[in-house]
Image (cartoon, rainbow, N blue to C red):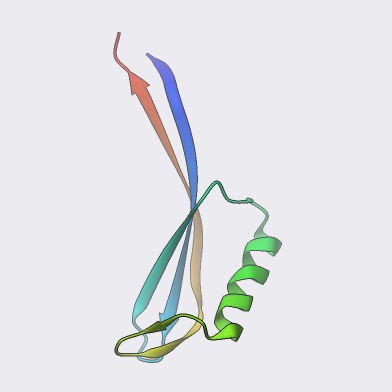
Length: 74
């Protein structure tokens, strides 16, 4: 089997005002932790994302790089 394609996605999981998880995914991310943390802090500080029940995002819970490989069967 040969790898047909590989994609990476950054998954950011935040918490809101009622401790509910809110996740966002970003394609083709930079894998640098400092850059990811700075961007996540900017998202929280800007208060541009809010949930229906919990108000504004209050902090970053986790960040993950998810790698997906697609292999063809020959």
